[in-house]
View (cartoon, rainbow, N blue to C red):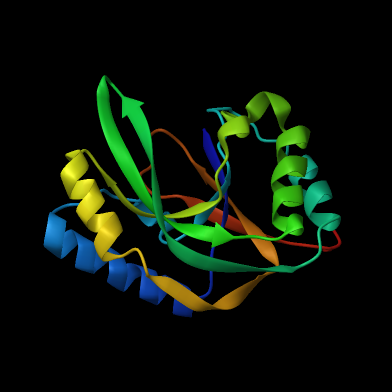
Length: 180
């Protein structure tokens, strides 16, 4: 079973980011797929486990207050998979202490289930692509001033689950300060 913990921004942000992704895709070709998760911010990278202790996630969420996040400018990081280097271009997330606290508490609660927690960069992926450095620099230069001039209130996370046989994620919404 595969699990994911994500934060999904509001519809206004998802629409603007989707338009940006389409624009970049039209200019630079296929930019990678993000499955049915859609526009999201990954909260923690989880291992392939048969069981995720949902109570631990619920307990963390009970102790978190809703918070606002913003978005400002593009950046990137590099990953390697099967010997190939690819870039992830992302919209930078301006996040408060409460977001970092949520991430840290989730990672502490799920210690053995978390992958690369020390490398966590809150981000909203725009493109995943194996491209030449020049093309990457063109994208970053052209869209360096892209920003969203508002903040979003975050009051819940989504727990995604799917088996290796399924293509689509199934999500459960978990609100902060909720009674379970």
